[in-house]
Image (cartoon, rainbow, N blue to C red):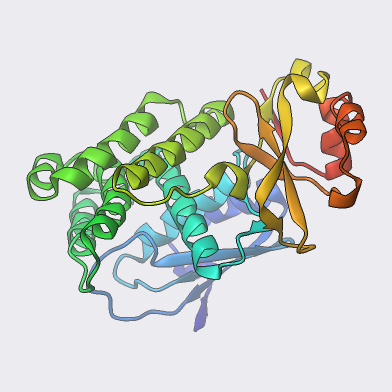
Length: 318
């Protein structure tokens, strides 16, 4: 793996790097770990943020500028006022936990792609050539060289197609509708949510994320499988008005004794769910042995901003 010097990058990429560094007081280092790539995919660059250091690794040499610009736009969104996903509970089953997080991250990234697509069209890194190569990769992903039962193949293809429709600008809708009618139907539900919201706004992004996860969960249920407990398993950054922050907790949230365990303590988890959407915003630092009716009565009377401060809950205002 070799570090890439800024002098070897295009002017557009250098300006993008400098913009992120200056706005966030961080240092970006870019490394090449090139390998032969049969297709152009959106995971051929990755990043890790540790303190004030951001490390990016790219694996596609031919479309270096495309995958690098793409990753930088994701980083820019991550460092902006955008809701994020976190998890502080566990089912005790690593495969189950991993599946929930993988699906949630996939939906989250596709929603980000609405914004990333516009940025890459504007800077020229997304053009007819990269679009065609991207769609070739999606077509290959829709026909994986692994055996899955019919339902799980539908679940998998739904997520792939959701991303393909959004980032491919509906270029293959008619083809995919004919070839994979069930997955296309499910993916279209997710696309409708993404395109009905202004995803540049944190409140609407969060609403779209919660609704998209609910919609995907409905797909799983429709196919006779047990649903995934997104609402209690995932914490999604709350977006509140200043007025709401001054309200008592019970006016906006409810404490739920979760079926999951607190990952840090191994004890029963208590999550804070929004009354309107049922989505957790944090896993509370509560000793299960001290949870009594009197505890709930007192806890619900606290101001939301005071609870968020005590529990160190990241929140956004609108």
